[in-house]
Length: 431
Image (cartoon, rainbow, N blue to C red; front, side, top):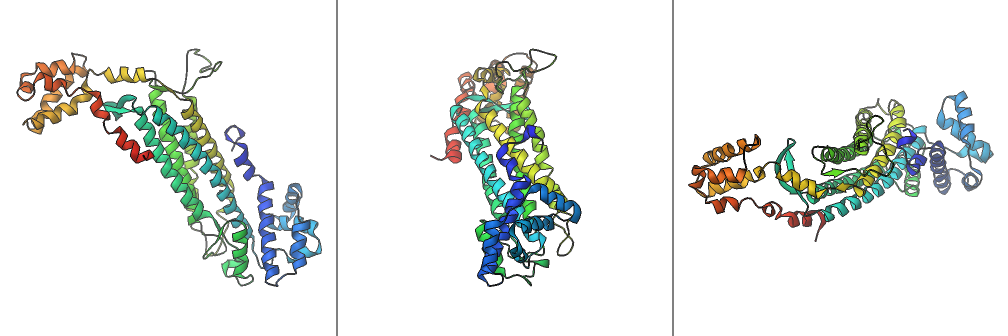
């Protein structure tokens, strides 16, 4: 990804230096296991740890000649280790190094993303608690529906990102496997105990059965999970964008002193952060399909997945890391306007209580079809700006056959719509 949308910790994980260091550790741990099994001399394993090293520039130089990245790395390593380097990579194949390294990187990326999710969850919870009882209009199809609270909107986001955390933990577990099984995955030239040793050393599990590669269904699920998280980011960002529209203005991104909203119009305060998040979510999601297409490789191995993963690995994790941090900042600094929420609640002259009146009529003996007709015929003039819903209902003689004016008025109480907020909060946040 470009520096604009990159944070240092995640970016460092994908730098060549980090990748080659993991390659070195895989080879060195494999040497330890081989030495324990008597396949290679203990002095050779010790020499790798003591003298082993590499230079990125030198690896690149060698690769330009040999056209093979793992061979270039092993050649550079041998230049540091000396004669004992002939025992390195014993019985292994390139995919043992590449696939195990990629999974290590994805596991470490997961840990960064999980920490991001924890920070985001904390920010959302703070807003939810602060606005648990801040009443606002709920909308369906973008149209005023019935009252809700801004705290419930935040509680929904909290529950969604909690599910995302559970999904990511599962994806992390799924991707945390190691394959040191040699050509076509048969262990013909390397003992399975080497794989178990390397896996344990790197915090992974041994892949139960690999071909010459780790099965890519694991990676498909991992990137699909990142895509789901990105979609949740976009959902919250889209909600904030709609609520910031001039005609609504119930919430607003923080606008700092000296910030400029438009090169042409000095009055503008645009939702640029959430618009940016919408775009970043698209970038993360687009990595899911190539990851799924990587599942179908030829026979025991081909490298059609390789070029894809060199791109989507860093791109998806770096972008999602940045997006989660940006959304956390948006939520923490969000400007909430309860007075505008109340103003919007009042805009439709009481129409938000139409269902309560409908239900009251049916309870009083009116058929549902007639009740709907009576409520709707009094609601439609209010839509046109012709009167107040309560007044029209109280003046309707047919409605009056079932409900007194006091009974109708009693249905225009906002507290009725928020009486179960505590119940929902206990479900989301516990006691």
